[in-house]
Image (cartoon, rainbow over all chains, first blue to last red; front, side, top):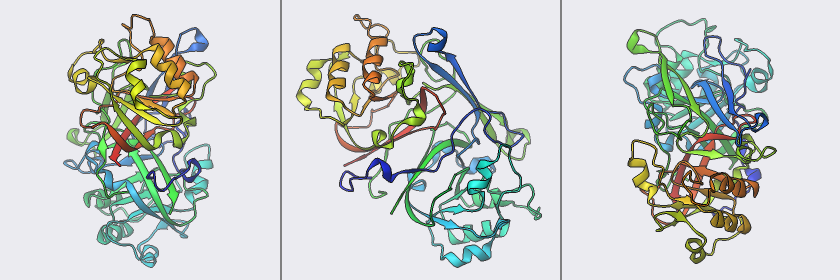
Length: 221
Length: 215
């Protein structure tokens, strides 16, 4: 990061998915459109594109306001949440992230945790969205809140799942966001080994908005 | 990395914000809203890729140029120098001469645009821009990145009619551009820069988040 460390281009690994028309999304979300409004191929002197998308498309962040009526919005996020050391934890459970499995990892207060599951690469290789992705159970969400982490990242488009048999309130989003744990969803952690990394994840500065698409990259510590 | 404060040099994205003449307006729409009785809040955005603080990739003006999803992280992450330009009209070759700009540098120009042009609710057509001569010098020096503190490196009222040429000279030399920085709170000097665009496939630009940390 700093001039002293002399980091090279190859040090940064992109864990963001490409934003393109036809990409997978939840069925209720508006589809992403990249409209080349002015086009050199059509005789304009420049190319100029208009973006239409849900803020919860591809690799994106949820701020507390997504599920908490008076919660913080994405433009209020302190940079300390998404800039700094993060730990990639590999989850072996093929169904869900459970408290018992998290308990093996000695998770500490203030950590940034990225959960790698079988979703990477399976979720991202599919042509259509698969609802059978690994999600965070409510109990595991309470475990993370109890541990006092500041950030949780997952490798599917949501931390929770409509297929979770536990329908109790509050749900996974409400537990995490209600404890002011910021969330990155839609990471592609294919090829990333578990361990410690430097994380850079920056959302757009969307005023009073409950989330944002992000670019997220990591480098091995 | 977290020891020193990060300074946000990004303009907020908000409905009604100033955009380039004839560009589309920013629309942030809360499509699903807890205020209206929905279970969650869920917003949709519609905006030009060249809105607010954004990057231009070579493809913006070069038909075969690289697109924003091809930007190397090395161009946008690392040490950067903020140079203050006192010239009230434009950034000229003479203005650059004292600074010993080197190959591969990331250069951010702070002008009277920060804050004057940003305080204008309407498009500030008389913003400080880069002249063709200065663009040629920066291309010759092979800097990696140039950042400016208003919506374009070139001006629609440049007497040399450099709007297109300045972009072509810089982008043709594969110098990546950040436009629309707000450098109001930043003093000249050396910083760590992080500027990240969205990974928009085959697109000529992207809104970005850009932050600086004093070195």
